[in-house]
Image (cartoon, rainbow over all chains, first blue to last red; front, side):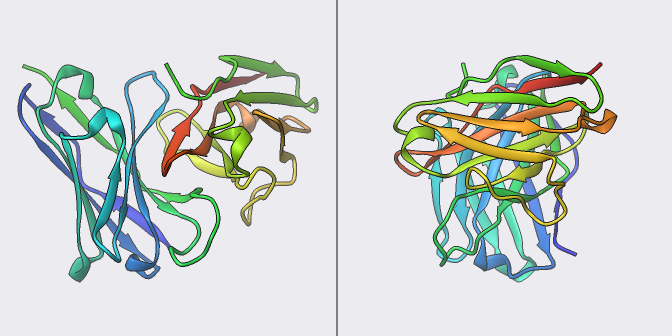
Length: 124
Length: 110
C-alpha cells in the first residue's frame, strides 16, 4: 500500500540542526510533490515548504527560508528535511505528506498520504 | 496567527449536522478552488476528507461535504457520529505557490 515512513524522534540542543527522513513506498516517488508540515504541541498545522523529487526543486515558506533544506535520495525513495539553528520554538511534530495529484497534472495540492510524524524536541 | 480563520470549536449531538467555516482572502480561498479539509484525531496524522472544495477521496463517507462562497469555505458533517469528534483543519493554495492552513476547529459530539 501507499505509505510514508518517517524517522524516529529526535532531541537537540538550541543552535543545533536536525534532519528528518521520509521513505515512500507503494507509488512512483518522483511523480508526486512532497510537502513538509509541522505541528507544535497543542497547536495547529504549519506549512514549511514543498519539494519536487523529480527536479530536486523546492519552495520554502518565508518563516523558514535560510534555515530549512529539502532534499531526496531517489535510490531509496526517501525525502529529507533539515532544519538548522534550532530554538525551543521548533519543538514540534514534523510531518511529510504526499500530494494526491501527479506533478504533471493540474489541480490542488491536497495531501492524501501523511507520514506518521517525527517528534523533534529542542531543549538545553 | 494562522492565515485562514476557523472557529476554535463546534459541537452537535449524534445524528445532527455541524458546519465549520474557513475564511481567507482573494489571494487564497477566494481566488482558487483549491481548498482541502483534514480530520485529525489526537496523536494521529491528519487525514484528507475533502479536496478541491467539494471532492471526496475514496473511502471518505458522504456525510462529509464541502462548499465555498467568496472568501469562505465550509465543511459540513452530517449525521454526526462519536468517531467524528476530532480537530478539523482547512487548507488552501495561496498566491504565489504557497499553502496555508486554518487554525483548526475542535468538534465535540455531545
